[in-house]
Image (cartoon, rainbow, N blue to C red):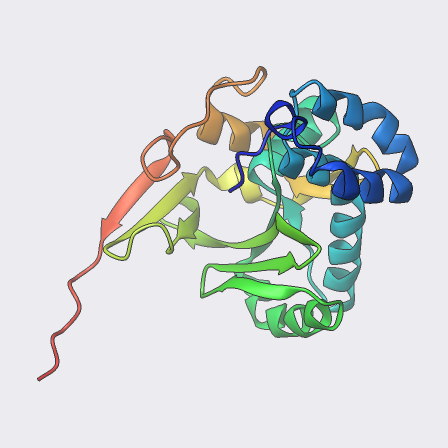
Length: 233
């Protein structure tokens, strides 16, 4: 994760080529977001999300449809869509989810994204994550939503080799999906109860909150200890 803020970077002007390229490609969004970057209110990674995010998300959703996937927004991308109908200025990635029943279709999406020049950042039973060389900190993450006890769970298997982190959700949260509009993208799918998802993760999601450590912070977190690896002689 980059910590390069607009205020820190303006002294050397090393940001000019990157910002100029973004502004040339997305002039209308540049009028809205470049001033925030110049004031130091938006990091370079955050600017890339606000400027390039709609195009990258649109491309990903189109390839998902071709692969027979029906992804919905999650985490910060969902929060921005519900609260602001846009991406969140402090975010730097795109978060999507699919149901476990569609897991077998991910290889088709994987192949399509590779053809577009993306690289695989993470790939396991719980997540598929892409990154493009032109946007090295703008990750596109797809989490797998699985039935868990009487509801659902999203699992993080990357944060700690000795633990699995399960984020639990009530049954109604993912009981289908519905459509909302996201700036620059148009109509997108969200979980059936987006407010229920956000409340489970963020608590009071209606106003900005300090960042939390997602290995320990969310109220809906369940930690599963893994057995130590078996030593081989």
